Image 1 (cartoon, rainbow, N blue to C red):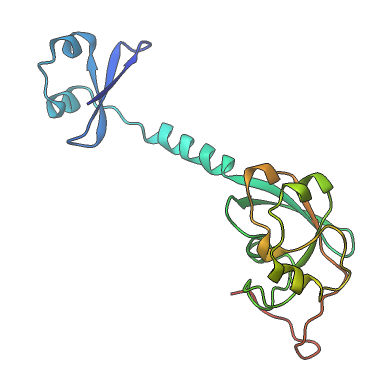
Image 2: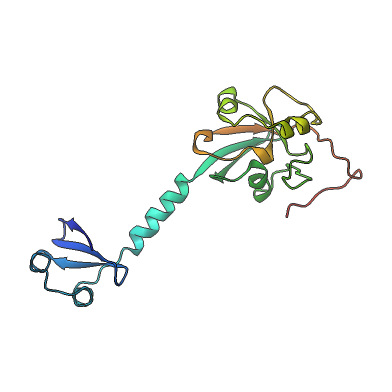
Length: 181
């Protein structure tokens, strides 16, 4: 049983492993140790739902980073990306025109992005040989080019800015527009 003191209201909070909920008891009940968890729950019900929900929302906000995509016309779109998600997936979820013809299988260069800040670029994992091979096929390759499917959101990349090249090299039929899955 885990106990913590709530001095403001004069109750002790008790998390009972048998019922899996927090219950409250007065200081006297706590010191006596005579009440059972179910008796206490009936006498002093306590809900942490609002606090739990606020804590969960705060964690979700902390578990996302801010990423700015700059399209070929210079228009910017700032999105929140969950930690662990690739920039290709994030772009698809937010209707950003980042192609990704191979769906992130590292078999094309259509999700080519340009990291706009060298400081963020240096925080990325080094590209693999496979990624470098695909980048060699990318249109408008730069020193800070990466494949969006290989750039994974992590806390130190918060504020990342990615430019989308003016075109991609896709071997599909002209006019073909892939749809994200």
